[in-house]
Length: 209
Image (cartoon, rainbow, N blue to C red; front, side, top):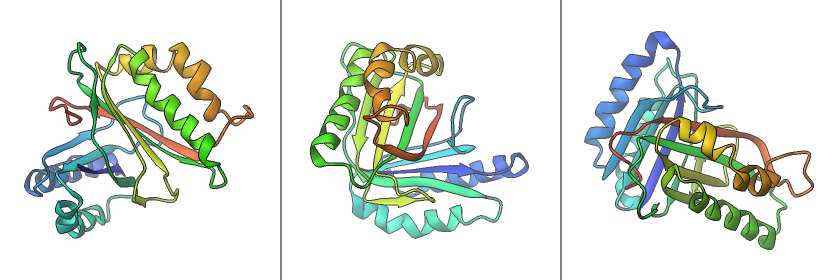
């Protein structure tokens, strides 16, 4: 499948209108799954609205990309970060469907060696198995990015709820003892550069399923 994620900054006075415009576009664009929702408290550089479209293949996205770009050129929108990427979500058996979609846009240092990059990706892929509040996930390398940062990875999860992110996920030993070493600039193993976009929103339709 092919996914497109956009994190949209828009002032409160225009937020409802832009949300409704994007919702109409998402419903009519031919995406197999779609999500348009306000981001939740705790998001960091995550935008005010989150748009996620999941297509059967990249050609379906190409057919509507200009329409999406035109909608996101609305004068009220002050910033957009995002990416487009191939991949298929991984569901975790015996865990209930979650109600919150979370995405992390990140960029690793361009001089990162292939072996180090493989270990980094392996650690991210291990993480969902340890965090009981995650029911589905996907790790992808984008083929196009939007925003000031050239994103190298998109890491998505379906969580039970927002508390499942702020507590069991961010405070789990697998996170702070294993994964954080790649992000913490004070750690010699750090490879993640620039800022990250950590964004999450309600997802009653389970867009990763």
